[in-house]
Amino acid sequence: MARIDDRYATRERFTTLRGLRNEARRQLSEVAWNYLWCGTGDETTVHENTAIFDRYKFRTPIFAGISNPDTRTQVLGLDLSFPLLTAPFGGEATFHPHGHLAVGRAAQAVGVQQMVPVAASHTLESVAAASQVAAIYQMTFVGDEDAVVDMMHRAQRAGYRYICVTYSPIRQWRERLMEDRFSPRTDDGPANFGEGLSDPASLVELLNFTQPRWTWEQAARVIARSPLPCIVKGVQSIADAHAALDAGAIGLYISNYGGRTLDREPATLSVLPGIRGAVGKDVPIILDSGIRRGSDIATALALGADAVAAGRIILQGLAAAGEEGVRRTLELLKMEFWSTLGHLGCSRVSDLSPAIFAQTPQE
Ligand SMILES: Cc1cc2nc3c(=O)[nH]c(=O)nc-3n(C[C@H](O)[C@H](O)[C@H](O)COP(=O)(O)O)c2cc1C
Image (tube, rainbow, N blue to C red; front, top):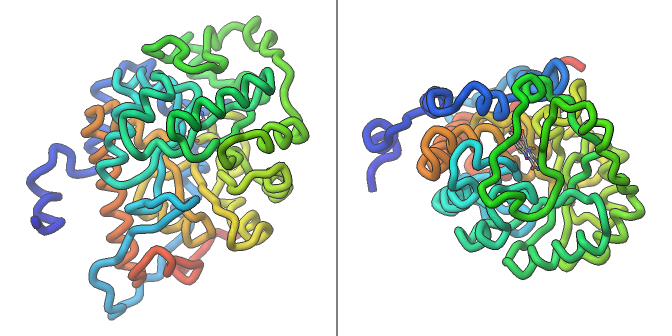
């Protein structure tokens, strides 16, 4: 087998994530690039999501005696070759026509799991058939309860193992999209069901976004009827963590949707330790928003996440080179995580703890 650095240097078209970013920028129109990187309002949460990782400084022990760290782990009983899942992102055919079909195949090649959104560009069945790793189906809880439960059964029949529950109170204020009058491309039309985007610049659209929004009581009722275990995405507070578990969720997904819902929400990393402390060590926690590097994964796990999810960086790989670009993105994240573990003196994922930090941000 080739040594890891030989492969790194010679075989691959992309040697770094920066190279993938440059290629994605070349491939995408300005409007599609804005759809990828936009947030809401002044995009301060988008910025803070990544900036916070830089404020944690590592302590690197010498003579730690580590040679080849084991990056494997599990979350929700799902095997991961390193602690990452691909996030549920919709409108992804904007970046490559194969969309989630390519993401699933690449995820399988690297040994991670895929989350598939209701807003995917292909049907949930075709995405499930493309790989063995389409494990989690994301559904927005809105509209008719029976229709939502029917969709859960459809996801179960297709082979999904979990439902990721999301809530979307109202149209998000994404000014880059409003200026561009942008609608993401969906090849199969609205492949599943959902709300789609029509004209985000239209005030009428904003004001008409009036489908009744659900309460926790309704969510609990539907979670109880779900044929699949549910995790709740969008948790950002201890109160919502408890509410989600009380409603029947078996896991938490801490997320501010990459700063794409409401600006001035806190960085997810800043709320993670409090939530982990409040729910105890046994509740599975996935965290996303701001994951850009293998070292970010180590930081999130040290602070209490069981695994992270990545959104834009996976889509960037998809835009750069389709399935190959996603596979390469995942491989580079995995290798950097492996390198980080070794430098931190960790021989396995479970060795990660707050002891890896030399400095943490001042509150
Ligand atoms: C283009 C795009 C589309 C997205 N669509 C969805 C979606 O349909 N459902 C959902 O739950 N989250 C969606 N998200 C949010 C991601 O699942 C994830 O929470 C976010 O991208 C994580 O932040 P990161 O991009 O900094 O990794 C989307 C994100 C992007 C970039």
